[in-house]
Image (cartoon, rainbow, N blue to C red; front, top):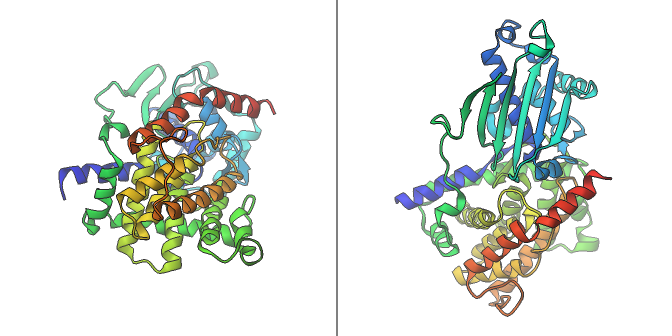
Length: 447
């Protein structure tokens, strides 16, 4: 394996990882959990209470978030609670969160923890506010445990700041002392996605030539997201989009691959957005994006009995294309993430059907010319409908591409050069839709 191949695999492993629950409230839970751990490490009163002190502590939790975190955390289900929103996510982070688990911070959820967290919310011990920040992804969680000193005004507090990535902790502090910041040697520097200098051509060559043994880890995509899909089909989660498609496949949708893929992918999103306790394999900090980027390809492999190696290569291609496009958008934007993810899955389907680099470029252009305008109006159970739409567009774009059909550079935002086309989408989503993002948030918070 070459050094460049190692570098690309490093990027994949950084951006494709398990996440339990919607990643915006999970980022909040992660920040709160880290703050509580800082209290535990620096407060003698905490350590003297015993290992289960967090289940009994009267936490006071103050969380400041960027508008996009608020938008994506307001209406989404929190695993194992039957509740939605950032308040319960914050409380769970305090009571049972483990920051060492990253985006699976709530993996150790128990009924006792859920009960205590709900009590904290009921007691109004959690405050959520919008931060004054230019960061689209920002969380600052300040936590104190009421009664740790004789005077409430002297109660020590700990804080944690997350910026730009859902699990990127850039600052922690106790009382008035900064223990770690991104300016210190304690914080590891991290290369940004665009700094990797990827192109679609290099992605395609990498996915099709890298030794299989070096990428077979990506098959965990199938393990996690297929389990979510099966759970979504078995239970009555959210709007039951995937389950309804599958149950009405013969009478309404037809017993074809598109309906099969739409149903399976939407079912995984149904389960995840309604608070299922199974993790998703995320992409670029989004579980729904991870589901949408992989499940249509996994559905194809199931339907047509594809071997593991071509499946792994298709998943690598799909995930990397999504990561590449997302690098020009940023982690959060007014553009729905399923647009990016379904573009990646379209490329994977093209590959599994024998298409080459040119057909992959056709598929990307077809997707960019189709559903680029789909807006993100927050994470919620209704996202499964957008996921289903993205899958339909993904397969349609792949079929057109395999027939040599592509949206031309005379049309809208499409450019003859594939990289310029991708940058155009990124510019629209990150800059052009800023006012749209603000308007969506205003509508949501004023309902």
